[in-house]
Amino acid sequence: MAEHPLIKQLSVRSRISQEEQNALLQAVGGTREIAADEEFIREGSIPSESIFLLRGFAARYKNTPSGKRQIVALHIKGDFVDLHSFLLKKMDHGVFAMSACTIAWVPHDRLREITERFPHLTRQLWLSTLVDAAIHREWLVGLGRRSALQNLSHLLCELFVRLSTVDEVAGYTFRLPITQEELADARGMSIVHLNRSVQELRARGLITWRGDEVTINDWDRLADLAEFDPTYLNLDVKSR
Amino acid sequence: MAEHPLIKQLSVRSRISQEEQNALLQAVGGTREIAADEEFIREGSIPSESIFLLRGFAARYKNTPSGKRQIVALHIKGDFVDLHSFLLKKMDHGVFAMSACTIAWVPHDRLREITERFPHLTRQLWLSTLVDAAIHREWLVGLGRRSALQNLSHLLCELFVRLSTVDEVAGYTFRLPITQEELADARGMSIVHLNRSVQELRARGLITWRGDEVTINDWDRLADLAEFDPTYLNLDVKSR
DNA sequence: CGCACCTTTGACACTTGTCAAAACACGTGG
DNA sequence: CCACGTGTTTTGACAAGTGTCAAAGGTGCG
Image (cartoon, rainbow over all chains, first blue to last red; front, side, top):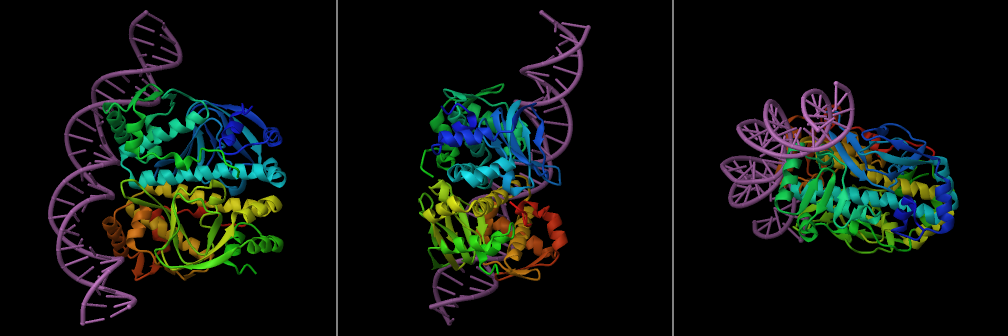
């Protein structure tokens, strides 16, 4: 049970009945393979379906008129990447694949049907967008009030915890197919400074990072440095 | 019609039927006056009702263990300040009144009933949390990729537009009962630097700011400096 | 009129960004 | 199996933006 990545994700926070699971999975319109670096949702577009990830890493981002990029969210297997487009209509940002991805889409009119017929499931979908917002808030704290080093550490802690929930970690090691440039754009810093921060974490013995494999060598010290508190991820089953 | 601030806000994005309006307003449990600086939702608490503002300015914030504060959202008349607590359960941040406020609350079990019986209204409530998230994203861009001066300008533009939708502006003038310290915490900067940015905007003739009254003297230049694009506020009526 | 809170100023430190080049890694084709 | 090319990571030197500390001015309210 709960083999499907999307169901697995939702089940982290509330029990999803068999009927709801069926309704949701039957709403899926299809799947598609996406190459790394492909932008599969364009800023300014008005999608007629919402997309979730079956595999891979994706990022939501905004470009500024002056040519800078800020990544505003990172998504992993099982995440509903643009569920908000169902109601927001026009995309205020774009989404691209950081690694090769498999995506699945759910047409908006089927989502609407779900909201008409499955109130509890609707609340769970709503909840998943609320968790995205909670992550945004934590990132705001990071960008506004934490040092570059802390903020980078915080992201590594967050990714580790989130990847754990979808079984994408082995011990304290996980694949992170993300360039330092992308990481820098997620943390609102320059590549050079991000790189120096990575090396500082290495020098302190907190992480190992070779190729696209990251290992957290000392979780306690890393979480402490990052002031990481996973409350905002809402990772516990409650009746909602 | 649409006299109630909450209804007025929701009506900006989709038509709310009379029946829905009644359901929503009848769900209100009561109202209360809040003094400036009072924290009326505590971080870590598990509210049993959600609160919206009938009057005044409020802020959502997170404190870091090292004693810093980041304001993650600003709320005005008609905003549903912690609708997300309905599903998120535990507050990952606190909320305080920046000015004297009048609040109203809606018990969560009544919200749940609404989700069981009024799918369209549910979608509109969901949407209002999605707009909050869109604002978070724009703030992320500001904190990550814009200069202090741009970011301050951006906030002034945003507040002006949002206040317009609830008739709280007169021409290009509006009340802003917020200290510079609070503004600094919203922009992730120090008070001193925020103050210098305010003075820079004054020196450039873009704004006038005396006491708690702000006037935007040159909207075009201010919006241009801020790279302000109101798309993310989703201020147009659509069927959702 | 005086107190408390807010705003403003100055001097200086420090984190982070920028520019430019070198080193490295990996996939491709010979 | 090695040379090559492209993209990524790493370095160094320096500039710029922003933070910190401390004190002086303002402003409004009791």
